Length: 164
Image (cartoon, rainbow, N blue to C red; front, side, top):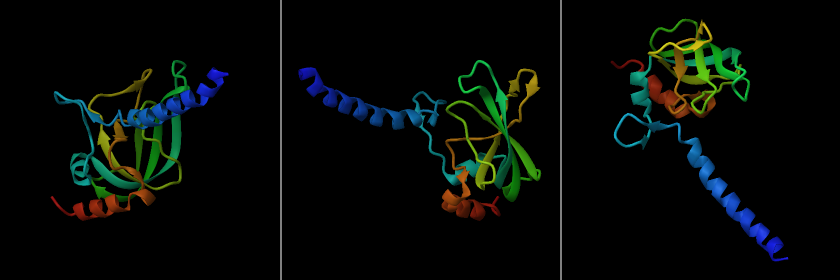
């Protein structure tokens, strides 16, 4: 009987622990590992704009998962073909291909939705088997996201467009 009474208390502690640990774990990928101490990384719109190859408003039109028998989800990479709707920095083609790894650093997108995208280019080529993957990607820790949720970042980006 005592163990039955203690069960809700044990469950409560487990739920409290999980609710505190899961959000912290989800931010683990957004850490700057380049210095002597790991610090959370929160880029300003201006800093990310300056370091990006392209900054665009884009709409994913095609999604392709690159399969892998070793991955529990069944794929290692997702390639998004994105139609460029507006350009805030750079001279991208009308359509760009972006790669997103199936890891905690993935940047998932939904076809047909509009996104503010700060596009970077990988310095190291990635391959799926012998097939080269696109070099362009979006940092999931940055200011990219659904356009409907990034109105402030879009306004700041528009103000930075003409500056040098």
